[in-house]
Amino acid sequence: MVSPLISPKSLKLPGAHVVVTGGSSGIGKCIAIECYKQGAFITLIARDENKLLQTKKEIEKYSVNDKQVVLCISVDVSKDYEQVENVLKQAQEKLGPVDMLVNCAGTSVTGKFEDIEVNSFERLMAVNYLGSVYPSRAVIATMKERRMGRIVFVSSQAGQLGLFGYTAYSPTKFALRGLAEALQMEVKPYNVYITVAYPPDTDTPGFAEESKTKSIPAYNQNIDVEW
Ligand SMILES: NC(=O)C1=CN([C@@H]2O[C@H](COP(=O)(O)OP(=O)(O)OC[C@H]3O[C@@H](n4cnc5c(N)ncnc54)[C@H](OP(=O)(O)O)[C@@H]3O)[C@@H](O)[C@H]2O)C=CC1
Ligand SMILES: CCCCCCCCCCCCCCCC(=O)[C@@H](N)CO
Image (cartoon, rainbow, N blue to C red; front, side):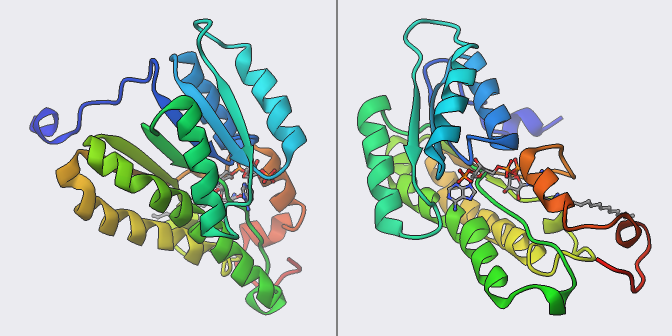
């Protein structure tokens, strides 16, 4: 009953600038398409330029007016903050300040703790956690100044509870929740709202890749099995 009083007004997507990291595939691509269908201008961020261009073409089929733009930026969101800040500056020069940032770039590695390469723990934390910190850090000042903005973090069900096989992945998704809750406290007075999504297994190219390293017995019984 009180929810209309405490919930923010929903963002008006027609004409809004929506940035989707990981927008060239899977969940990020679907989010980009949904926003575009509602009239948003889209910036897609990912590394592989061919995939980006292919996705841009796919999204453009859903245009609802002839002003809409899909901009592609090839950058690794996990490597260098300055670089991420620069490309977001460029995107904002072209399409205006970011109204909504969807941090969807991410990846997973599964296996038994002792079998996962040590550098995978570092890489997953870099991509899944820092890869969401950097773009958010780059847009937050302008959102606060404009007294508007939305930031979405794509966590996972494995970010709500630790799961067999996800020792490298789960902590990166738990970290996003900590970030989101702390950041929400800071930015709420500026009419900036943070959302965390906790998707279950979702049929995407990334999930297909992950599934190659999983065996069905390990999924069904928590016992010592080949993984
Ligand atoms: N599918 C699932 O079952 C679930 C997925 N999730 C989360 O949802 C998000 C999307 O998953 P999903 O759609 O399956 O993944 P996909 O692998 O299909 O897509 C991942 C996207 O992220 C981009 N990306 C990956 N690494 C980087 C990087 N370092 N810098 C910039 N872009 C990068 C990829 O492009 P490129 O490789 O060209 O850079 C691609 O666009 C992830 O955060 C994942 O953890 C959460 C719960 C369930
Ligand atoms: C009473 C309580 C019952 C709790 C049951 C919980 C069942 C959880 C199933 C979790 C499925 C795995 C999610 C991870 C998805 C993911 O992030 C990767 N696929 C990424 O590629």
